Image 1: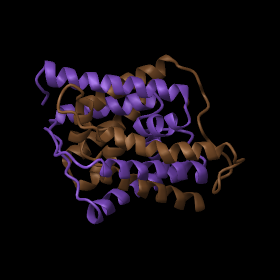
Image 2: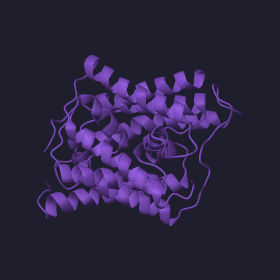
Image 3: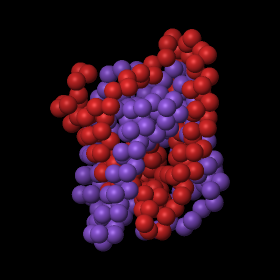
Image 4: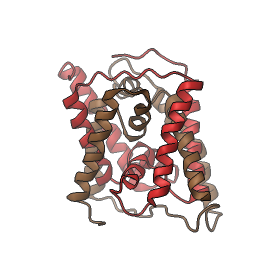
Length: 139
Length: 145
C-alpha cells in the first residue's frame, strides 16, 4: 500500500513537471530538436533540472541496502550495448522527431482532451503490443 | 509552428519536478521511473514491473498534469500532425522504446543520472536521430502533414 501511494505521488510530480516545463507541447520539443531553425533551448533546461535531483538520488542509493517503501532495488544493471538498444533508440528518435511526442508528454497531453494525443497514445500502445508479439524475448 | 518563447524558469522548474519524481521513486520504491516501461507494465505488455504500481504512477501522471494545468499554468498543445503521421509516429515510438528498453525518462533522466553506458548510448542515438528527422522533414522536405 505504501509503495502504491509513492507511485501515485511520483506520478503526480512527473505529470505536473510535464505541464510546468511545457514539454507537454510538442511544438516546443520540435523547436528544441530543430537545431538549424528557430532553436528553443527549453528541453535542455528540463533535462538539466531533472538530472540534479535524479543524480543525487542515485548517489544516495549507493548507501542504502534497500529502498524505504519496498523490499529491494530493481535497477537495470546490464552494460551490454547491443542491436536492440541501438535499433530501438533509432526507431524512437525517428518517431519522436516526426511528431514531437515522447511517452511522458504524450500521456500528459491526454488531459488537454486533444484528439491527436489520443490517436498517438493508442498507436504507441499498439506499437508496444506489436513488440510484445514479435521481438520480446522476456515473455 | 514556432511556440512563443518562455522564460527558462519554467522548463527548469518542470525539470526539477520530473527529477524529484525519479529520485523519490528510486529511493522509496527502488525502481526506475521510465514512462515507456511503466506504460507497458500498466497495460499488461511487459513483465517485471508490478502492474498496480505502474497503473498508480500513470494515474498520478494524468492527475498531476490536469492539476498543474488548472492551478499553475494552462498549457497550449500545438499538434499539427495529420492522423496518419500521429499513428505512424506512435507505432514507431511504442515499438522502439520497448525494443531499446527506454525513452527520454528512463534512459535520459534515470540512466544518465547513474551514468549507465547503455543509457548514454541510447540517449545520444535517439537525440541525434530525432534532430536529423526534424532537419530532413522541415528543411529538406518542407514539412510533413
